[in-house]
Each structure stands twice: as C-alpha cells, then as structure tokens.
Image 1: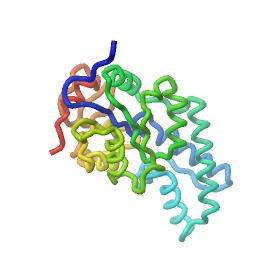
Image 2: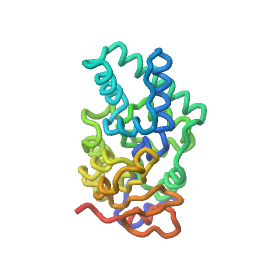
Image 3: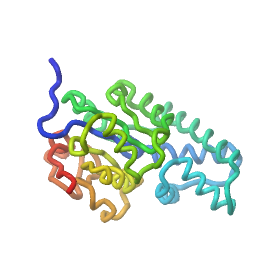
Image 4: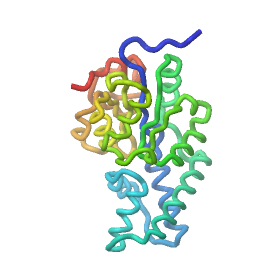
Length: 254
C-alpha cells in the first residue's frame, strides 16, 4: 500500500546535521581537530568551552582559518591549513567508523515516520559533503536512502546564517517554504531557516544548550531534544515526543 502524506501543509523535513542529527560538534569535530593538532606536533587543544565559542564561525575550514590567523598574527600558511584540515577529516571519519558519535534520540524514529507518511526529506548543512557522507554511512546506513537530497557547504557560496542552502533545497524539492519544516540546533541555522521563510524546530544540542533563549526567539518551537523532549517555547508536546503531527501544527512564519 502506498504511503500517504500527513494531512495538512507539511510536505518535507529539512535536516541540519551537526548537533541536530548527532552530537557531532563536541564529540566528533572537536576531537578530530585536536587529534589533527597532535598529529602535526602542534601545541593547541580545544576544550569544549573554547570550541563552543569557535562555533560562532560557520564551517570547519573557516573556523580553523580564523584560529590560525589569530595564533600566528597574520594570514595562515595555506599548506598548514590544508594539512590540518585533511588530517581532521581523516580523524573525524575514524571516530564515526568506531561508533564514537551516535545519533541523537528520536532522529531515526522521526526519519522513518516521515518516510512512511510520504514526506520528502533532505539534508541542509554547512558541513562538507565528505563529513556528511561519513555520518550517514556509519550512523544511518540503513536509512540514508531516505535522505537523497543533500545540500552541503560544497553546493553554496554562502554558509548559514545565509539562507542560500535552504532556498536551494526548496528549489530542488519544488516546494514553497510553508510546506516544509527545518530542524536545527543553532542560532545560525535558525537564522538561515527563517530567512528562507521556513518554520523551524530548534532542538538544542550539547553545544548550543547554554545559549541564551533570546537567541532562539524566532523558532517556531524550542526544545531540548526529539525524545524525551521538554518544550521551552512553542506548542505543548503531548507524550514528550516530537511527531509529524506536532511539526504540522507549528505556527507559520509571519
């Protein structure tokens, strides 16, 4: 029997990756950067607090560029930047392959529910395609085909908070903003989604949970997870689970 789309206007879920699908920032990318520093004999180590501050800069390569520039007092050496970034990517994939980074609770359930209801789903991220593929291949292998459209850093000229990635996803899906919900965890992601006219569920991650609530006032709903969930702003959530019915009722952008 053919799956039917959920009633109402909801036609697609647009998933952020880092911090949303999995706790990749502190448990994955940060650790991989530190291993890259150690591999190249460099003295730097990013603790969680430092890395959370660095997350204000979108994109791992851009983050690294900013850090090297401030450490070296000028434009970083391109050779060192590239060597560090390549080493970091290798260590990140190794962490995923070893199962050191896990999906957040409720992610697999909601992806399956959306697929069963006939919704389209897409990845919309500022991460590189290689990092996205590594996560999907290792933590979502059996469901990766349910996320066929992947808008990554490689596909856009401007990263979040710019809305380009979301606008491109909507164009390729053939949808109006009112027909989709973005699922994010960060202020930059929220800003990108809302600038594209999307409703946005923000599910705070370990890296963004300490941000002031005022940074998320544009969210259609602000929660601390998909399951069990505590709604910090937005419609009440029966049963403590973010469901398609819950996402359907999120208020539209003004």
